[in-house]
Structure formats: C-alpha cells, structure tokens
Image (cartoon, rainbow, N blue to C red; front, side, top):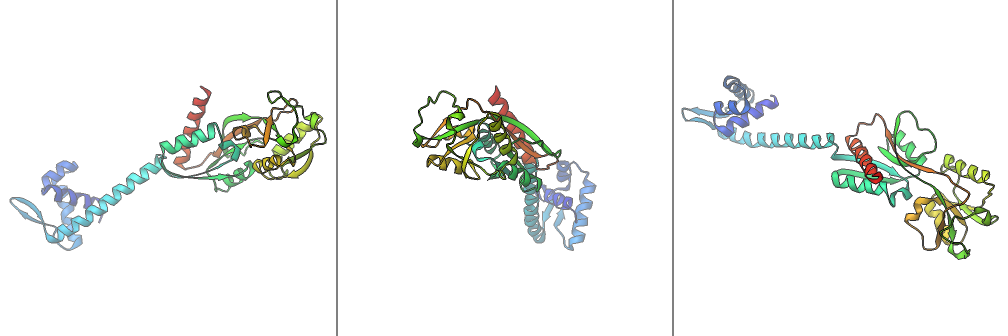
Length: 301
C-alpha cells in the first residue's frame, strides 16, 4: 500500500464518483479505478458498493475512511510543521552572549525582533564569556554567539561585525574623589590605589591587550582582587574594595555606588560580533543572521 492509495480512496469517497475524483486529482478515471481495486484486493474487503446511482461506502469502507482521513491529516500537519522548520520560523536556536552585550543596543533589539518574527523558534540563551562561547560552538553545543573578538577566528567560523565598545574606569563613590564626570580621567592619578580585575584564564587575549595598553601608557595597576565576571568586579567596586577597568557597555546599567569615567590615556577597542559555523544547517540560525543584519542596517541608518 502506498500513500496515493489513501488519497485516491478519500477523494472517491468524498465525491462518490470515480469520474469526479479523477477530475479533481487530474488523473485518468481508469487509473483511479485500478488503484481502488488494488487497495480493496490488498485489504481483503470491499470499500464501495457500486450502483447506477454511483458509489456508496460499505460499513467497512466507512470505518476505513475515518482512519484514512486522520492519517492524511496527520501527514499534512507533519509536512506543514517540517516546512516551517525548513523556513526557519520554527525549530530550536541555541545562542550564547556576553552578559553586558545584552543590556542595550543591537543584541536585545535583534533578539526581540526575531522573537516577534519567529515565535515558534525555541531560543535557549546562555550567558558565557567569549572563549567559552567559541568552545561551545566548536563542540556544537551552541548554534552561534555574541563575542568580543580579539584573535583571528578559525576558518570554519563566520562572523558578522556589530559594533565596538571601549573601556571605561569604574570608581567607587565611597572614595569621594573629586572629578568632573564629563571629563576623561587620567589613571596616573590612581597610582597605588587598589584595583579589581579578572584572571587571565578568563579571556587571555583581552587580558593581554588591556595590560599591554596599560604598560605602554606607563600605568601599573595594583590588583588586589580578581573576579571572573564584570558583574562580580563591579560588585566589589560598589563595596569600595577597588576601582576597575570595564567594558563601556556597562554604562547601560550603572550600579548605584559606582561612577564611570572615560579614560584620558587608555583605550582598548572591544569589537562585538556574532559568530557561527559556516556549514551550519539550522534554518532558524540562517533566519536569525538575516534578522541581525537588518537590525544592524537599521541601527546604522
């Protein structure tokens, strides 16, 4: 038995006529008749009674039709669902992002837009630092991620540049240092003061870029505490444990006990981009990348 047997049978039953069914299906009447006969032979019972007034379902045929219609409806629903996955408007999407990139700008705008355009795509979002995201993408644990890129990417990864942040000084309000918040801060004024930073193992490329820039500017940071995330670093800044140099993206969510200053003599551009496997076969990912491109175009317009 093949699927066409069920479709032909349902059409004949609906129209109570071989001729009408053949016209609807655009198949010759002899072909329809032969397929119904083959189906009856395989089933071992008669589906229709035949009379000069047309065809009429037998009790067995009526029972078989109910189940055949359920099967055909289920197959049509399966095809519709699969088509939505193929079009990228249904399915699953696993994304990573650096926490501070999600507070303002392109990242939350793109996520909101995609969720509105493809509400049947189940998104799983993971807060990870950039090296962790790259490792997860390589292991197929993530479909893509928002990272700060310092090193060249492997050839199998594609990247979409989004924007570039810089670094800023986070100063505890408890220190009561008098400085015009509109003016850049000279880090030399904090010589000997305690600083909070992050371990090199968290992101070696960024760590080396930052401390190399400090060295070139003649700045030596007195690191008294290390924390793995900028949120944890800023919590210590709030407590007056030390100052910190952090991503300017934190300006979108300023802690109450911290003052932020642009830096007079230190700059480390932080290029934010979205990365994914070039050979990824997830249609939802391809649709998300297009949504992200459009969001960037609108932001730049």
